[in-house]
Image (cartoon, rainbow, N blue to C red; front, side, top):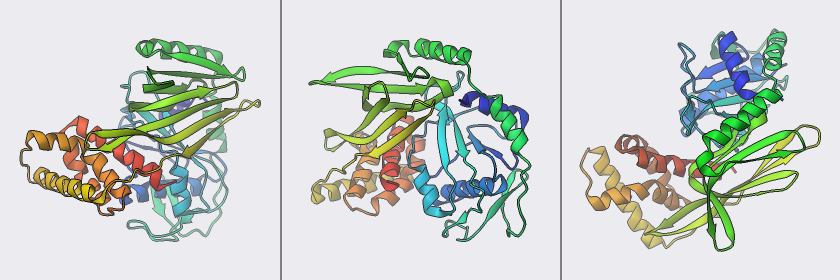
Amino acid sequence: MINKRLLIKNLLAHNDENSFYDKKRKVDITHKEGKAKFLKHICALSNSNPKNNSYIVIGVEDEDNKIIGVNFFDDSKIQNLINAYLTNPPIVQYENIPFPHLPDDKVVGLVTIRPINQITSLRKNIWKYYGGSVFFRDGSMSMPKVFDIEVKDVNSKIVNAIESHAQNNIEYTLDGVFDFMTKRKDFDPQYKVFKEYFVLCWSGQKKKVKNETFFSRVDIELINEQVRLFFSTLDEVSIMYDSNTFKIIEYVNLGLQNKNKYYQLEETIIHFEDNAHYNIETNLLFEPPQFDKKVLHHIYNSNNAILEKLKKGLILNKHEELDLKNLPTTYLLCYLNLFHEAINKLTEAKPYLKNHSKEVYTYYQEAVRILRKVKYS
């Protein structure tokens, strides 16, 4: 089993960007330009390295390889995006890798692109790239090219060497468990060994609601691979497990006019197999709540008025400041109730919310995360 933290260190230490490896400071697939560039890089790496795994490391400075991290990205539907836009889409996995020196809410993103030994191309137009385009790596760049020659396998030896030097061992596993238990000592850390091989650690603030137990500030890590499977400071989750599986049900708190309710968002089930393999199954459980259209019209118009004041640099009154905290969620609820322009308004608000306060921008990120899961399911 590969220790993904070691793999990232090996990639950064021994290689410039090339035909099997790319690095990015950040990736943003919340808008068309970001989606298009991400798909271009997936396409180029898949085509340029047809026999081996290819990698994109996200959260690294380009000049000096300094690890700065990115926000935890829990988009289990990223394969749906790949399948929707690429012909001969490769299997792509996005994983969140914690590093000891990073803050709790930061990780390094690791994108693994599995080899398919077929030519991958854009299925349809996106941003400035045309459907049918084929991309390859040209040094550290992903470039459109006419495919008329066979791609030679020049990477197998070096990729195999990098991956073999990143294999996990008992020392790394034990160190990982002790580090987790120490770091999360204020949040009731626990661990469990599955199939005498996999070590899963989790922590969270526990609370009882009637006969059910929920956790907030949840952190879940698969120690063998140094992969963070779940992290949230806002949502609440329920956790269930047996000897073969570990199940998480994620809840989101939504509502209008201070009448909120918890809704199931997504179920994640980790299946541990006898052959030292595991797989992760995700199921969207979310049923969008429906509200009175007159109330939504009033809230939608109020949001638009607040957004206009932000754009003009005007000071909000106390009531508007309170409404601003709810603005990302209420725009989301409007969109889920068929106010189609609400999502454009939410996108338009992004830079102003980010500049206004970290707290408000966190609510924006949460709304976008829910939307992404719903949209690609």
